[in-house]
Figure (cartoon, rainbow, N blue to C red):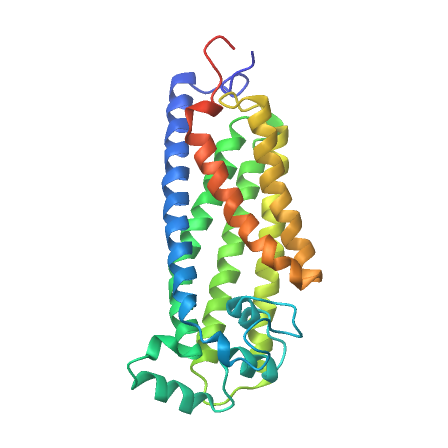
Length: 273
């Protein structure tokens, strides 16, 4: 059987230690990201859906369910007013800060969620980076550079995600909602989602061609299909927004499954292999 250290010129024992550290780091980061994701999800329960113009169901012509995603992909002032549930932004925010139910105001709920996203970003970025480095060990000498490409893609996603959050903070604190505020959010947001889809598809392909010695063949293909498939879903969802109701959870599920699987002993090859 071909091992990870074959053809790499590295110390096999040191490489095994690196693999173990990356697996642990991946699992820890994914666990923290999952907890943060759940906190963000529970926080959105305070978003007052019942007062939305369309009955609290969907935004953007009935295409988007999530108010956060609706804010990220807003194209015009009316989209912002719909998700923020106000035409007088300054008054809405001022009223929310002096009431006992401040967290139930749409503007405040989205502001808190955006603050939490600033913590979530380095967690999921760390998972993507660990995946890229972990499976670069299983690549041939000529393809080891793919790990560095995966890291660069993951960092690019994080950069555009932070730019998106910065623009969202500006819109959430603006005295007046305008079309250019919406477009300033949606431009980096669309780049972020596109890059994330490409990154996941890239990592899925990288896993598929990897000769990583710690995974059973079936487990490797399952991880490749799960991660790559979630990337394809995100890319397609940008063209067909209703798919985001499935694409976004698929991304989180892919990371959680891959982390649990890589750490779990049931995916490791037996000594007899």
